[in-house]
Length: 400
Ligand code: CAA
Image (spheres, rainbow, N blue to C red):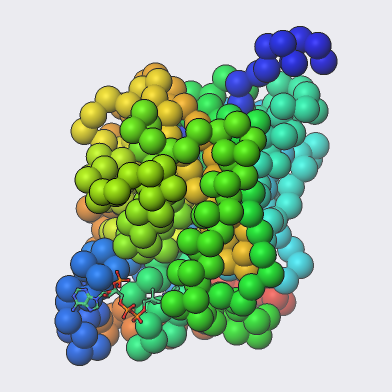
């Protein structure tokens, strides 16, 4: 105990794995189909494209693919994982957690604690914070945690929320002596409120949202989390940082958040630092869309993949927001060597298939029609990166 107080262990993110659907729709095409000026979406919201899942892709398949990617990058065997938490607000079952499917498909050990965490887009951060505490407490006994954020963001066709959809998963291996980001656990600033800015009743596939109010709630939560971060000894995000990362429902939201943070830092010209401190983290989110729980960590992946400057050893701040609401502002240090490992992510995003608007609308409608299987598919799963939903049998979802 004394050793830990005098020489606290370094904990944080050891590797990130990413998964997103094979197809996307361009927002210039959606704008044209809806009779909206293209610039409202591409500049007003700052989003260029949204990932669109096909019927055999769901929250589980995206989570498995991201987790397999993260484990491979960390060079960690499933047997080394002692805690697996999936943060999601688009689960596939009211009772059986996505983490349980993950355990079966990845082969996580039977001694692994597995569960799902829900608090809108904050659910993944809830998992990360739990994992950090689990490791810092000594209960991990050398094992690592796997935190997976996986979601399919869905609003109705022809609604204001439609251009802020997306789908994807980010998996985090959390460990001691992390090789991507060390997190300062002493200054994590939390802010929460009971508000109805965004919700999805149990019977609804689509999210309900009070859109403009949700923007106000996000900024109020940022103000509160910032005040708590500073009260705990954290510094106001300033010019010393390599980047300020935000939850990104759409890139313009991150721009509004950055303006507030810089105002709190006494900066009268916040836009001047936007290109340096925020823009690289928005390259991938602007092409994938909102992925709810994974959105902040997609911004981190984007920073690593798209920053043209070396940022090793430098600090970043991260702001996580989940409607309802709970938010956290925290600080971390980028580990030397982290950037090079993620340089190919942008090419992976660029390789997706572009859909027409009628194809996107057909996939949107088809997503609820899961095929009933006559018989269980036989055979072992060979490649975890191409696990697909086969259908359901007696309410059980079958993957192959
Ligand atoms: N060219 C350029 N810009 C234009 C334009 C044009 N022709 N027309 C409008 N714009 C600008 C507007 O000025 C506005 O910019 P500012 O916010 O800087 O003023 C922007 O485009 C959006 O315009 P509107 O506000 O008129 O758009 P809208 O009423 O259709 O709705 C929205 C926007 C509220 C974000 C809606 O898309 C929505 O409800 N999205 C879902 C909710 C959401 O994402 N909330 C974010 C905070 S909550 C959260 O973060 C949790 C989460 O993940 C859901």
